Image (cartoon, rainbow, N blue to C red; front, side, top):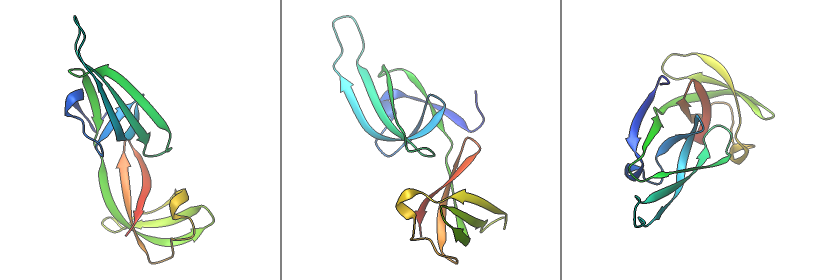
Length: 131
């Protein structure tokens, strides 16, 4: 089991929550449930968007199946500088300075001195939104 991962039951997942699909932390954007058959349990299809690569992923399991939920940590950081699609950020708690790519939807909107929300999971970081 990976560090920072908890377990949940498929039927407990909700839209907007996070789940690991193919070892990739994803935000749940759609949930479909099929009715149980004569001899089986209800199946659920979870569609998620990868929080680091924005790729669409699908998970199909019985509604009472076990899923892995990544531990998501949200932090605040200050933008030190922006150069093209890369940004220098400073963690507002530890004062650590690091570089992260600027997401498509924030290109041209980040400026030095701005605060952003950083999302951390599975040892990776990404800028989630401008504060």
